[in-house]
Structure formats: C-alpha cells, structure tokens
Image (cartoon, rainbow, N blue to C red; front, top):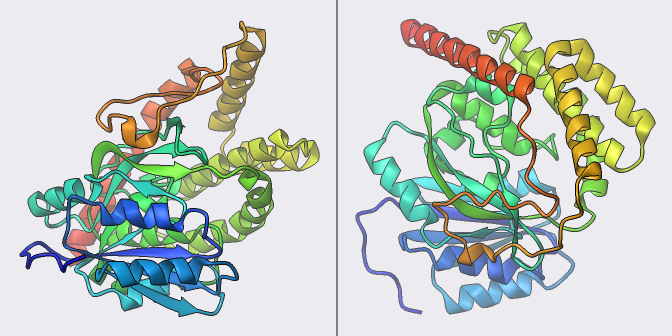
Length: 363
C-alpha cells in the first residue's frame, strides 16, 4: 500500500495492546486502517504473546507502512499501553483493544469535533456490545458527560470501553500514562486524572464494537472485586478535594455491580458481602437499585418466552440510531431509581462546575 498523501490534519497514533490475540488482531487492526480519517499510525504492542500475535502484526506492518509492531516481555495491559504511548508520534493517541472494532468514521467524527472544540483533551464515543461473530448484543449506555466531569466520573465510569477514546498525547504524558500497579481499572484512573484537569467531549454515535468474550465474566469478577477495594482508597487519596459523599456514591455503585456479578455465578455469600458494602456507603441508591433489579428479574421470569433472534452485524447497524437490542428483552426503566439518578447527576454537575471554578481561581 502506498504512503498516504501529506495531510495538515493532526496525526493520530492508534495503540493496540495485544496479548495472545491471534484470533481477532487482524480484524481489529483492519477496522482502524479502514478509517476514513487517514492521517494515522497504528502501533501494535505485542505483550509477550505465545501465539501468532507477533507474526500477524509483522505481516500487517509489511503490507501497510502506517503499521509498526513493538514487542516486549509480558507486563500486563497498563504496561503495554504505556509502551505504545511512549512509541507514539501523533498529537493524539487512541487505544484500541485487540478484540474490539471501529466504525470507519469513528476517528473522522472525533477529529472533526477536536477542530471545533480544541480545548477538549479527551473525546469519547458511544459503543455497542458485540459477540464473537461481530453481531450486536446490545447498545452501551449513551453517556453524555459535561466538559468538567471529575465528580461524575467518580460516580460512574466515563465510558464502558477504552477503545472509544481519543486523547491529546501531551495530556496523557502529563497525567503519567497508565498506573502499572493496577491490572483491571487502568482506564478509569487515566480518565479521572485527565478529566480532573482538562475538558472532555463526546460524539453521540455508536462507533465502537466492544467484544464480549464467552467466560470473561467469571474470569474477571474475582480480580475486579479484589482490586476495587484497594482502588477506592487510592482514588480518595488522589482526589481529596472531592466531597466524601461522592466517593461513597461511586464506591457503592461498583460494589453493587460486583455483587450482581457474583450472584450470576452462584456465589451468593460473596454477593451478599459486596451488596452490604454498597448499602453501608449509599443506602438510598443501593436499596432502590436492588428493588429495580429484582423487579426486572421477576418480570422477565413471568413474561412470555421470547423467540431467540440475532442482532445485526456491527458494521451493518446505523451508528446514528439506538438499537437497544437485548436478547433477554428491553430492560425496565426504574421509576424511583431513574428519578434519583436524575437528581444525582444534577448535583454532580453543580459540584463539577464549582470545582472547575475553584481550579480557575487558583490559576
């Protein structure tokens, strides 16, 4: 393939951290290289793979001059990302996990927004969950965060997948990249550090396919549970100026999610332990959330069986139109829970606006 023509557009460095990713790496990399935004480089970081990952990456580099492969001994996802960020030459960096895919117009939409919002340091998009065959399982939540979103980000993750984000490389460097001591929440920490100091923005289109692997839940819940308890303390230390109740709200949400994951696995003792942690830190939200989830489960069990059907392929779905496809039926909208969430988000927005004002005054 010939080198792309010279461009005045900012160079975007796409970093793919890859460990034993031979099954999906070629498709993932191809989705980035097919981008309608052509001024990019693709850095594949082989994190000590023992399969054909390095070979596949090497073949891609031979056929497309935009591709580079960097090999390193296995050090985990945060270390692999930092290796890619250090090798990047672009003004912006974008992470793409080795089993996810991008819509061809993803980068084009993000960089168009970057031109109109040059202050935005962190730009994300909506995403869709896809299965191993690339079919849509359901839409991810269409999160619409304000430009200043530290408190909101502590309350709920800014995005559900790191593959949706484009960041200014200078901000990633100033934030210190990914903290390599954490193996599960590396994206959350980096997002919080950036949103604490710089504005963020989003493109309200479903432009990322986040692949859900069979068995991934059972393999990750134990690690997430153990690490979250330590990370909660770390986040409180990093952002002591954030009110304690915001940290408690965020801790409760994640403990409730972990409790539900353990319940799905039949580990009811561990589920009860994390549910109690959630209730202790935020009884109002946790009890409404529990009521909502129990009611949803009962409605599904009592409802008429739904015929099995497949979702559309990710690349065939219109990124502008929500699908809300769910093989188990559409989720219920919780009345009391929804009202509480609405009030919470308004309070968090006011807090973030105040913190931004305090920061501007300090400067």
